[in-house]
Image (cartoon, rainbow over all chains, first blue to last red; front, side):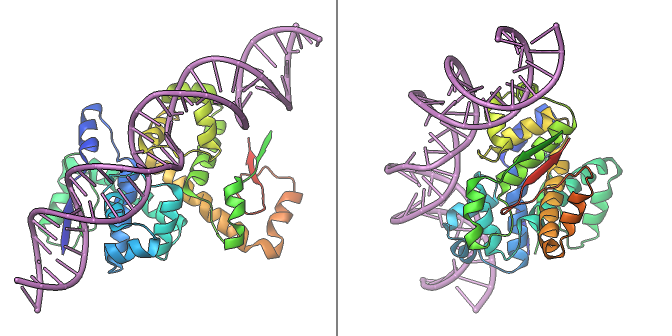
Length: 133
Length: 133
DNA sequence: CCGCCGTTCTGCCCTGGGCAGAACGGCGGG
DNA sequence: CCCGCCGTTCTGCCCAGGGCAGAACGGCGG
């Protein structure tokens, strides 16, 4: 099961300004969703555990909303992890975006895609954020 | 030159709930200040570069305000770095907090303090966030 | 069809982001 | 002493948006 989502319009609109990396809320949300889906947790139950509404969690995961630090902590707690791990993973994600971006001209990721492997990739700027289950 | 700042009251008030780590805005702000001071940049000029007010930057660095993702990006840009690096450093900081916390009973950090070495430590919960120039 | 999932929409309350102006205190230098 | 610079806090303000509830939508599998 591969979920495909696109960067938010705001991220795309900044392409003209040569913005090389996603915004915090985008990287955060993307990573939160990855963690949640990897743990086979539904959006609804995670939201309930975190004490927030499902629609709000949906928007956070999609980078549409800017959660407060307390909200981040609540979600992190509901996912049974820590802010340390989260920030580390977000950083890795962002670094991977840059790596993929740098290797674009080599067709590197194209090769990987054509290989049909399960991917856990995060890309941005006219690319697709792919999430592998 | 050692600047000493204390965790925000909100972080202290959560001690009773056994919160093991700082909030995102606290870790973020602390790290931003470390970066800025290491680069010998003043708060005022950094704020100007970022296009925000100095008082606002002050509050962000002190974990008092929750900056939007765009603000984070602006500050990061003003510091001449990237969100990748920032999140990695924040994660390291948070991990260090845990390490120090775990080694508390061994008096490890006491030994280091008594050695008079320049420290770049981040601690929380009834401890002091020490920033070495 | 149904139920479950996630998403989007609408409308809302009210919090707080972010600012400007002012004042404060610390520090170093003349 | 004064001054300038630094960072912080305070006050007051505008308004953006956090976060929600209810509703509706679309996708998917049984």
